[in-house]
Length: 135
Image (tube, rainbow, N blue to C red; front, side, top):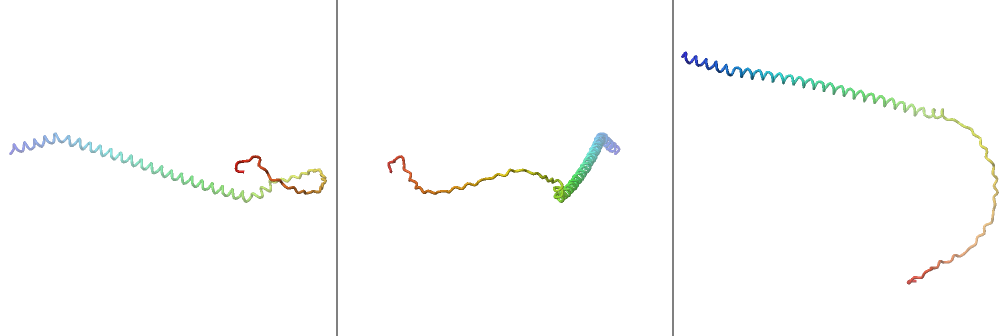
């Protein structure tokens, strides 16, 4: 019985001696892989957070630019309507009247009347200058 116990403990010691470092190396590699995955996930999460912040800032910029353009369009429309309203007065203010006297000579025309005589003439019919076989 002592021989069987010794063999059992010896076999157990050999198994632990050979497979113990293998199991330890596998456990260390798994720990390294898990830490790499966690660091990669944290980098990805950070990149997503930065992308969302940049997208949010972009949308805020677009919204602000759109509001500024709407405001400038409203200002331009108000200015245009004011100019249309003031247009007759501005045209009248800028009009200048110039009085110019011109001297035109008076031309006397003599009307000559002649009696018109009408004569009636008869027109002759045209004649052909060349004869053809059919005529």
